[in-house]
Amino acid sequence: MNRIAVLLIFALPLLTSGCMWGRMKINDPEIVRLARNIEPGKTLGSDVPRILGAQPTMRMPGKEYRMLGYTYADTKSNGLMLILFNFTRSSTVAETLYIEVDSKTDVVTRMYIPPTHDLEWRFWPFGD
Amino acid sequence: MRWLSPFLLISLAAFCGCKFHRSVVNEYVRDIDTSWITPGVTTRSDIIDRIGVSPSTKEGGGISGSSFRWVCADTFTGTLEAGYIVTPTFERGTMYYSEDILVTFDREGVVELVSRTRSKDGKRVEIVEWRERK
Amino acid sequence: MKRTLLFLCLGALAFSGCLSKHTGLLNNPEQWKVGETTRREVVAKWGNPDRLRGNEWTWISIDTLGSKFKIAYMMIGFTASNSGVVTSETRMTFGPDGRLQSVVSSETVPGGTTWNPSPW
Image (cartoon, rainbow over all chains, first blue to last red; front, side):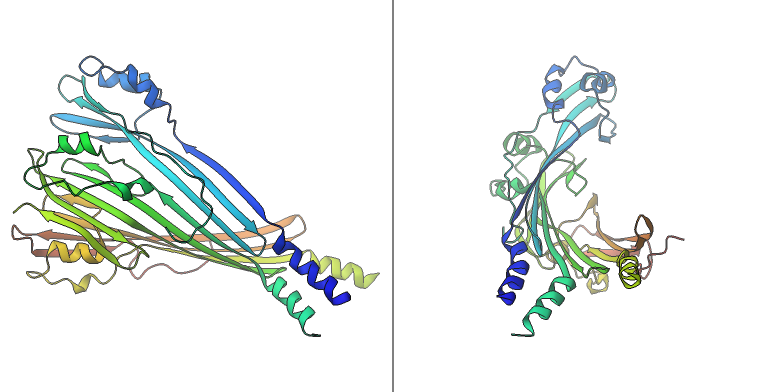
């Protein structure tokens, strides 16, 4: 009876499972919505940070045009925490909004708004 | 059976936990179709219309004046915590690109090279597509 | 009573430490032969380059070794931690025929870093 009780005490943590969900966003994906206020051919490149409410995360200078990039990311973390063994997985989608600005006139010439991608909750770290 | 209880007690004290963690960034890159890209014919605009522009992330990938690069970054971390009062922890992690697409352009914006590689464990890389302008 | 107190005091003392290693992919740049190796052969081993400037292709690898030591007694603790990051870069230029013209390899910390929790 004693042995069974000891075995049960040790086995109990293994039988008690813990699930974990976590979410993290880097920068503001809402800038995609604000970017629709930018009009190629009219908006000035120097006004872009004010319209989007943020400084670009990437700048690529050039003679004919320069590129501004705004990168944002969304991460979903999921896990199964069994005290002795813990399995967690994070899935992230990172995208960049690009704005091309004419180097001479400082006018926005083109804009690339990335599509949205589905993000799943996955906890198993092995396999695909 | 007398050895079972002390054995279980020692096991529980010796291993406080193992953690297996996987992080995948931009898994959608694996589904991008690049078979239609023809060096010498396809242009940067064609690629932007059909695939898009590669994102600039801290894990890698992005754009330059002459290239686009999409990557699916896979990180696998294993952690072993041992002991109670004395608790050493051992952690090992690897980051690699499970999918990597590179497209380079000439000055006119015409594709020069399409290079697509894949890796399952970060140690071995295989080229899935390689087409360059002759 | 004394034994119980001693046991409690010792029980509140804890040592812990952590050793961690994170690796990239890039090794043995000596395998490449000037005049013979093609870009495709390098990509087949190392994957796509991380930086391109015309015919100059660069591959970058980052390795990190981390170590931490902690000793704690009830609410008082002492922790020392240190981590070293080594960036390896191999720059190659290729000729118009796609063959290797030059290889330059460098590490930010030659010989790599070691596990050493001391921050001083």
